[in-house]
Amino acid sequence: MTNSIQTSAREEPPVNAIVVEGLRKRFDALTAVDGISFQVRAGEIFGFLGPNGAGKSTTISMLATLLHPTEGTAAINGYDILNQRDLVRQSLGLVFQDPTLDDRLTAEENLRFHARLYGVIGDRYHKRIREVLELVDLWDRRDNIVRTFSGGMKRRLEIARGLIHYPRVLFLDEPTLGLDPQTRVHIWEYIRRLQQNQSMTIFLTTHYMQEAENCDRVAVIDHGQIIANDTPAALKKQVGEDIITIQSRDKDALKHAIEERYQFRVQEENGSLRLGVPDGDHLLPKLLRDLPVEIDSIQLAKPTLEDVFIHLTGRRSREETVDAKKRWQQRVRRRRQ
Image 1: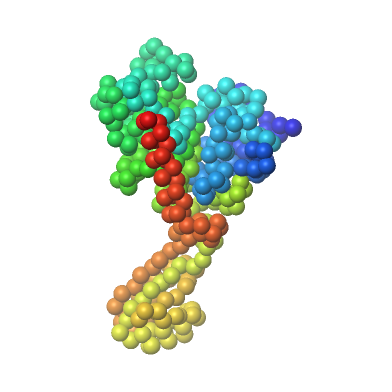
Image 2: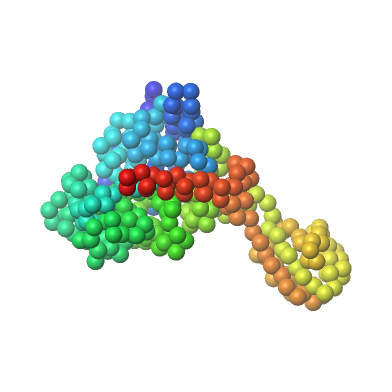
């Protein structure tokens, strides 16, 4: 297999923190990842969306050198995943989908073990452990046994552990799976803080469409292939038009005025007028200013990433999320037995 990614020692990080070329993984007759190629710019939050079994976790495992690809290659921070595995591992942090903490140890003991594996010792370790635990608001709980922690605290500790060795790239595989909405919001606060304060590249998988809105770019993978890759705003534009819903006591006059002035087709639905427009943000003020008929209420609805997900995969993310959460809870129960 020819390696087309050139790697070399660099004083400065590369423009693209992740470069993937023709990555494929087969398990006997099953092709889990089917020749995907993409790039992740340094310092961006990159979201990986897809139904369960689409190849998200398999991709992360290959990029983290935990699985050997059947074909293709990739580079992390300029290091080739096939020929420079140790340098790749030093360049990345990884927070697994499954819980991996030892809940019989303290928070500090969990981090100390991980730090020693990566050679973070002595004064460097003492400085770093305080930095990462303060980042996730767990410094005051460093001596507490992990089994006393809530689910959100454990996820924050896992993020801290993934950061202990100063990685340039952080992989988060379903980082908020199984957490309540409030805790998910807090986890995202830490993720954004990492990006802004440490210029860290963050590659994450998620089933939550609302979370994906926080990403700089989103790739949708289905049946092992990437079927879309763009910013959330650009992906939503592919789905359809904005919808403006208007209520008025003089619907007929309002409908006539809109169709005559703007040449839009107006539909009546449940006592309201609905029209699809390409750019609702700009049209809405004009409607309020120009129309001669009094308007009782007006609403603007834009396509969501949920619409994108359904449009591209034919599945609802909510169904995938419920299934994934059940599996996550089953894994937690098995680990406690």
